[in-house]
Length: 255
Image 1 (tube, rainbow, N blue to C red):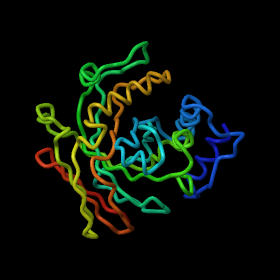
Image 2: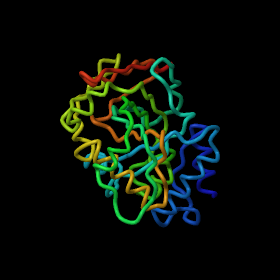
Image 3: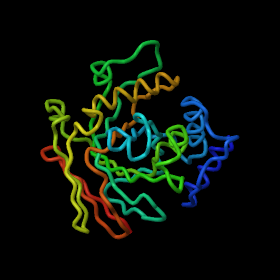
Image 4: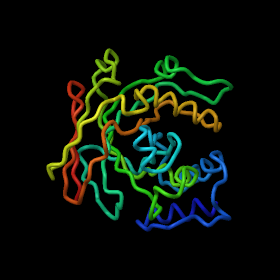
């Protein structure tokens, strides 16, 4: 698809566009997700999982959408805490602390929605995740949700840490405090309920969004469920730390 090629080339080169031409713009969510699917074939490695954008009312208002959006996490854009990231041409310049679930079972498309209990039964482990989003649009807050889905829901890069201790299963993570800070002295505090009321609710939303679009959530995939705190400003040279209290912490540094 021409739209996918245009967005992908911008992503690889750090370029921005003002708009997609009308003749290649998606007209439905299904069409937008088909554009997104092309990135898997362009990528050098299999898809690692999924992200959810706009999981808070504030986030939805900020990017001008009516609800959450799903995006693909590409393996080549995922880092471990020990690696240094290249800040590059990231215009959005923020980092977001998230809960990420790794799936232990495949959930296939079906008629009727999945409930949270059966979705959580399919989860294997919980991981700390920091998303470093960006958009290929010059002004992403004005292009609308269909083009943002085509833009991979502003997915860019992720730092995903090792699995958290199983004690998370005994906690109400909707009430769990998460903080994110930088070596530049910025500090934001958040809570699990900022993610559609509960990260587990967000995961369930993602499963049903994929199901409606005839997409399976595969065993082994990771879903980063959306930011628990207000995105924190970052710059080249920053070290970013996210703290999950008794569930651990994680840091990484930009070159």
